[in-house]
Length: 287
Image (cartoon, one colour):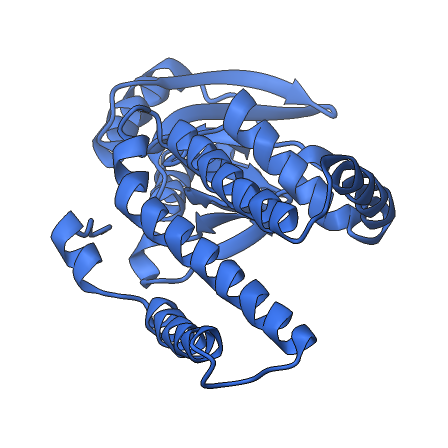
């Protein structure tokens, strides 16, 4: 169960980073006042560093507090959880980018120099942090193209689970809701490289194949019998289909049934036991 904190509770918990930043900023401002009042004499470089630290901490604190106060209201403009995640990140990054540009302008760095430095950094870091860039690009694809949604059950690279969160670098899936807080984090770049099976919100379509030695004479009656029994087990009338098929020169009874995701293995085992008992000698599990 996901518990949503109220606005009052979240504002009541002040992060330690804010307390430390405010305390350090107060100390720097006191030192700055002593220098301005002539009570303390500092070298030019130290004074410049002092001004830089005050601006840096001040800008970071103002933006962080502003985000904390406005982020929830900003998210209300978007109804889908994926849109809230995506645009909240863009909103945060944009404000911090403005803060960085402001600090650089105060240091006397021109816009042309800023553009040049960003270009050089982007070129150099593109090779060094390729995996990170792929994860961020994958995050953008997942949120904008939506191959699956938060709450969907998916299967990728042999792992199945319910999508809990789509982060900037990882997708968090819950492998089993019945085992507590166990989850798996899959890097976003995996979703660009591997196929994804979207299994649904709460149920999945499972296919069970039973090898047959021969077709029983009363096959029609048996089919009706285990269809009724399977519907009772699965507790779902959404989809159930049984038919005969041949694969690799083997006669098969194929059962397609919609099962609850969390109890699918237990239901599948009971269905196999049920049909095997009804088929009797007609069932053949020899290779």
